[in-house]
Length: 234
Image 1 (tube, rainbow, N blue to C red):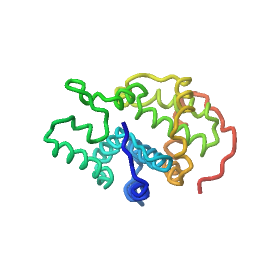
Image 2: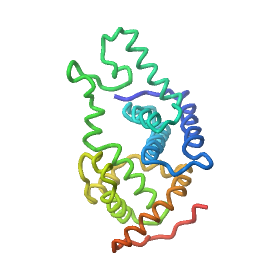
Image 3: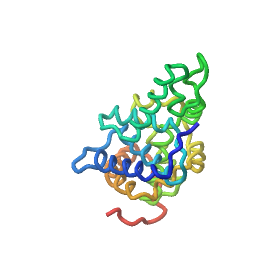
Image 4: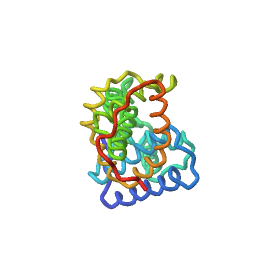
Protein backbone atom coordinates (compact mmCIF):
# COMPACT_ATOMS: atom_id res chain seq x y z
CA UNK A 1 0.00 0.00 0.00
CA UNK A 2 1.00 3.65 -0.22
CA UNK A 3 0.03 7.08 1.06
CA UNK A 4 -1.76 9.30 -1.43
CA UNK A 5 -0.87 12.99 -1.29
CA UNK A 6 -3.11 15.60 -2.90
CA UNK A 7 -1.67 18.00 -5.46
CA UNK A 8 -2.54 20.86 -3.11
CA UNK A 9 -0.39 19.38 -0.32
CA UNK A 10 2.64 18.36 -2.40
CA UNK A 11 4.13 21.84 -2.58
CA UNK A 12 3.73 22.37 1.15
CA UNK A 13 5.43 19.07 1.96
CA UNK A 14 8.32 19.74 -0.43
CA UNK A 15 8.82 23.10 1.28
CA UNK A 16 8.87 21.42 4.71
CA UNK A 17 11.52 18.98 3.49
CA UNK A 18 13.66 21.75 2.01
CA UNK A 19 13.36 23.88 5.15
CA UNK A 20 14.31 20.93 7.37
CA UNK A 21 17.38 20.07 5.27
CA UNK A 22 18.59 23.67 5.22
CA UNK A 23 17.95 24.33 8.92
CA UNK A 24 18.94 20.99 10.45
CA UNK A 25 21.38 19.25 8.12
CA UNK A 26 23.04 22.12 6.25
CA UNK A 27 23.06 24.81 8.90
CA UNK A 28 26.19 26.95 9.19
CA UNK A 29 28.77 25.41 11.49
CA UNK A 30 27.07 22.01 11.54
CA UNK A 31 29.53 19.18 12.16
CA UNK A 32 29.91 16.37 9.66
CA UNK A 33 26.72 14.40 9.30
CA UNK A 34 26.53 11.15 11.24
CA UNK A 35 25.72 7.90 9.47
CA UNK A 36 22.07 8.14 10.52
CA UNK A 37 21.90 11.76 9.39
CA UNK A 38 23.23 10.68 6.02
CA UNK A 39 20.47 8.08 5.85
CA UNK A 40 17.94 10.72 6.86
CA UNK A 41 19.17 13.09 4.16
CA UNK A 42 19.03 10.32 1.54
CA UNK A 43 15.48 9.37 2.54
CA UNK A 44 14.32 12.98 2.51
CA UNK A 45 15.72 13.44 -0.97
CA UNK A 46 13.97 10.27 -2.11
CA UNK A 47 10.69 11.51 -0.63
CA UNK A 48 11.12 14.86 -2.33
CA UNK A 49 11.81 13.16 -5.64
CA UNK A 50 8.77 10.88 -5.30
CA UNK A 51 6.56 13.89 -4.70
CA UNK A 52 7.74 15.48 -7.94
CA UNK A 53 7.01 12.28 -9.88
CA UNK A 54 3.63 11.17 -8.51
CA UNK A 55 1.24 11.33 -5.56
CA UNK A 56 2.09 7.97 -3.99
CA UNK A 57 4.47 7.60 -1.02
CA UNK A 58 5.46 4.27 0.58
CA UNK A 59 4.61 4.38 4.31
CA UNK A 60 7.83 2.57 5.20
CA UNK A 61 9.78 5.56 3.89
CA UNK A 62 7.82 7.90 6.19
CA UNK A 63 8.37 5.58 9.16
CA UNK A 64 12.11 5.49 8.56
CA UNK A 65 12.24 9.29 8.27
CA UNK A 66 10.42 9.60 11.60
CA UNK A 67 12.75 7.13 13.34
CA UNK A 68 15.89 8.73 11.93
CA UNK A 69 14.71 12.26 12.73
CA UNK A 70 13.84 11.42 16.33
CA UNK A 71 16.87 9.17 16.77
CA UNK A 72 19.25 11.95 15.68
CA UNK A 73 17.47 14.41 18.02
CA UNK A 74 16.23 16.71 15.27
CA UNK A 75 12.80 18.34 15.53
CA UNK A 76 9.94 16.48 13.86
CA UNK A 77 8.80 17.36 10.37
CA UNK A 78 5.16 18.58 10.47
CA UNK A 79 4.03 16.35 7.60
CA UNK A 80 5.40 13.23 9.33
CA UNK A 81 3.68 14.18 12.57
CA UNK A 82 0.41 14.71 10.70
CA UNK A 83 0.75 11.24 9.18
CA UNK A 84 1.31 9.64 12.59
CA UNK A 85 -1.55 11.65 14.09
CA UNK A 86 -4.03 10.56 11.41
CA UNK A 87 -3.09 6.92 11.91
CA UNK A 88 -3.38 7.15 15.70
CA UNK A 89 -6.68 9.05 15.47
CA UNK A 90 -8.21 6.46 13.14
CA UNK A 91 -7.06 3.64 15.45
CA UNK A 92 -8.46 5.41 18.50
CA UNK A 93 -11.82 6.21 16.90
CA UNK A 94 -12.19 2.58 15.86
CA UNK A 95 -11.47 1.58 19.48
CA UNK A 96 -8.68 -0.71 18.39
CA UNK A 97 -10.90 -2.89 16.21
CA UNK A 98 -8.35 -3.09 13.40
CA UNK A 99 -4.52 -3.16 13.19
CA UNK A 100 -2.90 0.18 13.98
CA UNK A 101 -0.60 0.00 10.96
CA UNK A 102 -3.56 0.10 8.59
CA UNK A 103 -4.19 3.72 9.53
CA UNK A 104 -0.58 4.50 8.58
CA UNK A 105 -1.01 3.02 5.12
CA UNK A 106 0.66 -0.34 5.68
CA UNK A 107 -0.73 -3.62 4.46
CA UNK A 108 -2.20 -5.07 7.63
CA UNK A 109 -2.43 -8.80 8.24
CA UNK A 110 -4.56 -10.68 10.71
CA UNK A 111 -3.70 -11.98 14.13
CA UNK A 112 -0.08 -13.08 14.38
CA UNK A 113 0.56 -11.76 10.87
CA UNK A 114 -0.28 -8.19 11.85
CA UNK A 115 2.66 -5.94 11.17
CA UNK A 116 4.05 -8.29 8.54
CA UNK A 117 2.75 -6.39 5.52
CA UNK A 118 4.26 -6.48 2.06
CA UNK A 119 6.20 -3.26 2.73
CA UNK A 120 8.45 -4.89 5.32
CA UNK A 121 8.84 -8.12 3.37
CA UNK A 122 9.98 -6.15 0.33
CA UNK A 123 12.37 -4.08 2.44
CA UNK A 124 13.92 -7.21 3.89
CA UNK A 125 14.28 -8.67 0.44
CA UNK A 126 16.29 -5.74 -0.99
CA UNK A 127 17.88 -4.52 2.27
CA UNK A 128 16.34 -1.12 1.51
CA UNK A 129 18.16 1.29 3.81
CA UNK A 130 21.66 -0.09 3.22
CA UNK A 131 21.22 -0.27 -0.53
CA UNK A 132 19.85 3.26 -0.74
CA UNK A 133 22.89 4.66 1.05
CA UNK A 134 25.29 2.81 -1.24
CA UNK A 135 23.38 3.96 -4.33
CA UNK A 136 23.61 7.55 -3.12
CA UNK A 137 27.41 7.43 -2.90
CA UNK A 138 27.73 5.68 -6.25
CA UNK A 139 25.72 8.46 -7.87
CA UNK A 140 27.81 11.17 -6.21
CA UNK A 141 31.09 9.63 -7.34
CA UNK A 142 29.70 9.38 -10.87
CA UNK A 143 28.30 12.91 -11.04
CA UNK A 144 30.83 14.94 -9.05
CA UNK A 145 34.09 13.00 -9.37
CA UNK A 146 33.81 11.79 -12.95
CA UNK A 147 33.99 8.05 -12.32
CA UNK A 148 32.10 5.67 -14.55
CA UNK A 149 29.19 3.94 -12.85
CA UNK A 150 31.12 0.67 -12.92
CA UNK A 151 34.21 2.20 -11.26
CA UNK A 152 32.05 4.04 -8.72
CA UNK A 153 30.37 0.76 -7.81
CA UNK A 154 33.74 -0.93 -7.29
CA UNK A 155 35.00 1.92 -5.09
CA UNK A 156 31.85 1.98 -2.95
CA UNK A 157 31.98 -1.80 -2.65
CA UNK A 158 35.59 -1.64 -1.45
CA UNK A 159 34.71 0.94 1.20
CA UNK A 160 31.58 -0.97 2.18
CA UNK A 161 33.69 -4.07 2.80
CA UNK A 162 35.90 -2.00 5.14
CA UNK A 163 33.05 -0.59 7.20
CA UNK A 164 33.08 -0.78 10.98
CA UNK A 165 32.20 -4.06 12.76
CA UNK A 166 29.04 -2.43 14.16
CA UNK A 167 27.90 -1.48 10.68
CA UNK A 168 28.57 -5.00 9.44
CA UNK A 169 26.39 -6.41 12.20
CA UNK A 170 23.54 -4.22 10.98
CA UNK A 171 23.91 -5.54 7.42
CA UNK A 172 21.83 -8.67 7.03
CA UNK A 173 23.61 -10.09 4.02
CA UNK A 174 26.73 -9.33 1.96
CA UNK A 175 26.45 -7.83 -1.50
CA UNK A 176 28.83 -8.35 -4.39
CA UNK A 177 29.87 -5.66 -6.89
CA UNK A 178 27.95 -7.32 -9.73
CA UNK A 179 24.73 -7.31 -7.71
CA UNK A 180 25.35 -3.76 -6.56
CA UNK A 181 25.84 -2.60 -10.15
CA UNK A 182 22.71 -4.35 -11.38
CA UNK A 183 20.55 -2.98 -8.57
CA UNK A 184 21.95 0.54 -8.97
CA UNK A 185 21.09 0.55 -12.67
CA UNK A 186 17.54 -0.53 -11.78
CA UNK A 187 17.25 1.99 -8.92
CA UNK A 188 14.47 4.51 -9.52
CA UNK A 189 15.87 7.17 -7.21
CA UNK A 190 18.62 8.51 -9.49
CA UNK A 191 16.58 11.64 -10.15
CA UNK A 192 17.72 13.03 -6.78
CA UNK A 193 21.10 13.85 -8.34
CA UNK A 194 19.46 16.65 -10.32
CA UNK A 195 18.75 18.60 -7.11
CA UNK A 196 21.03 21.39 -5.91
CA UNK A 197 21.01 20.08 -2.34
CA UNK A 198 23.06 17.09 -3.45
CA UNK A 199 25.86 19.42 -4.52
CA UNK A 200 26.15 20.92 -1.04
CA UNK A 201 25.98 17.50 0.57
CA UNK A 202 28.86 16.20 -1.54
CA UNK A 203 30.92 19.31 -0.90
CA UNK A 204 30.65 18.64 2.82
CA UNK A 205 31.46 14.94 2.49
CA UNK A 206 34.27 15.24 -0.09
CA UNK A 207 37.09 15.62 2.52
CA UNK A 208 35.92 12.45 4.24
CA UNK A 209 35.94 10.56 0.97
CA UNK A 210 39.39 11.85 0.11
CA UNK A 211 40.58 10.53 3.46
CA UNK A 212 39.00 7.15 2.74
CA UNK A 213 40.65 7.03 -0.67
CA UNK A 214 44.00 7.78 0.95
CA UNK A 215 43.52 4.95 3.45
CA UNK A 216 42.85 2.54 0.58
CA UNK A 217 46.01 3.66 -1.20
CA UNK A 218 48.00 3.08 1.98
CA UNK A 219 46.73 -0.48 1.88
CA UNK A 220 48.18 -0.75 -1.65
CA UNK A 221 44.69 -0.85 -3.18
CA UNK A 222 44.72 0.29 -6.80
CA UNK A 223 41.88 2.73 -7.43
CA UNK A 224 40.52 3.60 -10.87
CA UNK A 225 41.02 7.10 -12.22
CA UNK A 226 38.08 9.30 -13.20
CA UNK A 227 37.05 8.81 -16.80
CA UNK A 228 35.93 12.39 -17.32
CA UNK A 229 36.60 15.84 -15.98
CA UNK A 230 33.90 17.48 -13.92
CA UNK A 231 33.39 21.12 -13.09
CA UNK A 232 34.43 22.20 -9.58
CA UNK A 233 31.55 22.26 -7.10
CA UNK A 234 32.37 25.85 -6.22
